[in-house]
Image (tube, rainbow, N blue to C red; front, top):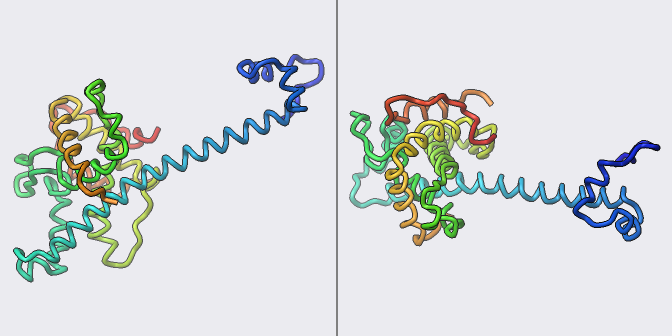
Length: 259
């Protein structure tokens, strides 16, 4: 750090050390304030880097969990003895994935209805969103308590919805071609996550009992085995998947989740 100009009071340094004890003592112990400042800033940078890495890992965990949930469903359909050979075929699997992403589809709704989307039930209540959310809640179970029952994990549910949608899209469009899934990051998923938070999540906040019901259903799955920037096609699909449950829609800031 550049020393304060000669003849001027190093106010910034005194402020920097106001919680660290006497300035003279610090100089004696560390020999040089510049050395102390550099050491402190290096420590701060290490902490910030660690926090940033934890945040990236947190985002990626949603995508990993969503991928595992949908992968298991695909494997289950392939191995099902109740489905015909035709229903288990790759062609029908692609049709199933496509239908799940239609307006009112099973990727998002607990009771889907793509023929008449107005008759869908429980947006964001699909088993794929709930299982992805449950994997998150398993690591934060202590924060969901009766004392803060009116505080909802809005960001986490939006991340779960975005991750599930991205998984279905990947299995439908890219995975069959051997194309690797893009990372769940600000550039790749921030817009999509913001869409779900500004719309479906906002709907739920107007009906807290529905949010609580979704959260309770996800919590029931916690004891189950853990499932270890431009306008994107995902945003277009999300717009189609989302069905407004309010009389009016809020303004949409697609990147608000990550600000």
